[in-house]
Length: 169
Length: 148
Image 1 (cartoon, rainbow over the protein chains, first blue to last red):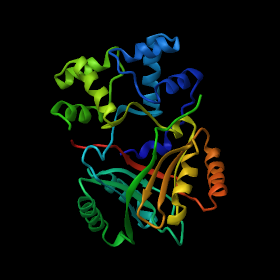
Image 2: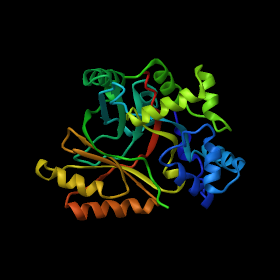
Image 3: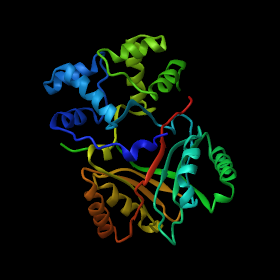
Image 4: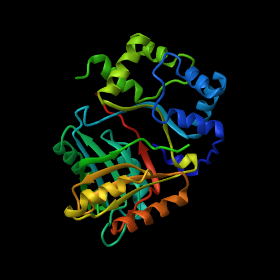
C-alpha cells in the first residue's frame, strides 16, 4: 500500500546522485563489494556511496534494490491488465482493496477518455494462465458488486520493447 | 529450469537488498548459502533471462522526471511500422501489444514532466495516430510478489 506517495516531497538530485544512477541503471555490480566498486568507479568514498543509497531509498527515489523477474519465464503466462469503471467517489476505497490482493501487482487510478475509454482503475493481474487471470478478475467483479460499472481485461500478446527506465548522461 | 536455491533467491530479493559493505554475503547468510553461490546464480539467471534486471529500481517522478502510460489504436496493416516509430523514441521504456481496439500500450519516462506532452505530440505527428495519455493519478500498490 503506497497511498502516502502523493504527499511526499520531491528529492532534488545532485550531480553525484546522477552519477550513481547512471552507473547503476543497468544493474548493481555482481561482485562481493558492489558499493565499493561503484565508489572506485566514481571516485567517491564508499561511505558517501552508502549514505546516498540510503538517502535515495528513504526519499523514495530508489523504490527498492531488487531482482526483476521475467514473469513469462517463471511460468506466469497469464498477465492481464484489468481495467475498471468505478464511481470516482469510491476509487480510493476500491484501489486499496484491489491493490492488496496477492495476484495484483500494480493498481492505479488513471483518467478516463470518454467515450472510447470509460475505465478509471487499472489493476495488473497475474496467473499461471489466462483462465487463472479471468477467474481472479471475476472475483474482483464480485467484490465490487454494484460499483463495477464495466470492466475488461487486456492481455498482452507481444512485448514490443522492454528497457529499464533510463536517464541519459 | 529453476532450482530450489534460485526460487529462494528470487523470493528473497523481491523483498529488497541491503545497503552494506558486503550485501551479497548478508543475503547469502539469510538464505543459508554462500556469497559465491549467490553471485553465480544471479549471473546465471540474468544470462538466462529469468531475471530482467538486478539492482536499484528508480522512481522516475521522484527524480524530477515524467512518467506516463499511453495507448494507441493502430490498424493491423500499420502496426509494425508504428511500433518501430514508437520504439525509436528513447523515452519509450516498455511497449506491449494488447488484444483490444487500443492495441499498443507503452510507458514513457522523460527527464522532465513537460517532456511527456512533447513526446506525445511528436509520436502523433510521426505516426498520424492519436495517443491516449493515461498518467497515474494515484498509486495504490506496486509490488511484484511472485511466489515461485
